[in-house]
Amino acid sequence: MPDPIAGRSLETLVEELATATSGAGGGVAAAAATALAAALVELVARASYEGWDEAPATATQAQALRVRALELADAESAAFADALAALRPAPDGPRPELRSALELAANVPLRIAKAAAEVASLAKEAATRGVDDRRADAAAAALLAEGAARAAAHLVEVNLAVQPGDTRSAAARVAATSAGEAAKAATKTR
Image 1 (tube, rainbow, N blue to C red):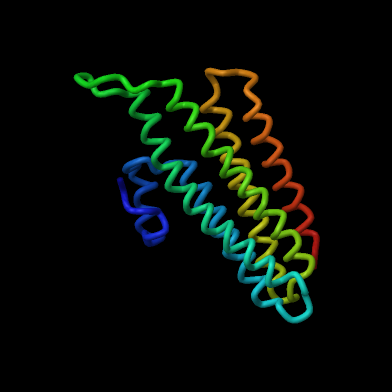
Image 2: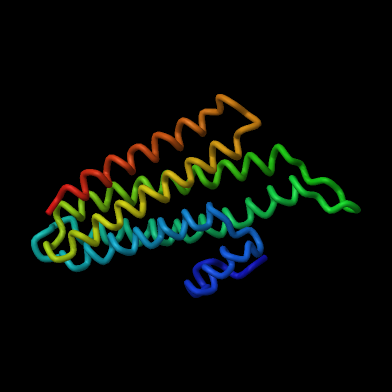
């Protein structure tokens, strides 16, 4: 099992994405973007303890989402590697079960999309209620989270292409839309 994403430097992660090593791909990038967005929300909330009563709770929620997003990056890396192995089995080895590999490859990005939507919602609150000189950081967090949710939702749909009508596609689109609405609201605050 590879080292956890959380233990890698940004430079290492970017290199892994660029060279397609292990299970790194779009889902890992979406999870990492979600973690970065959550970190920005945490930053804004911590800078806003005076004057925003819910800032400590928001910082705690953002921190938990940051940790969850990094865990999801690891889960996505493993799920993507399994899906690739099922799609491209070794010529002399057993063929992994394709359906279960694709199920997992859809489930993890759905969880990423939902986490990103949660981050975007927190970012909207931080952009509205945070300290003035950090509100742009909250808006940036909302935009990053929106992009992550949309990317993850796309991966859900791609991974479920063999199963049209699956409710997970709709759930992923709802998460992406929710993140988009939060980002739009966050960028309107000044």
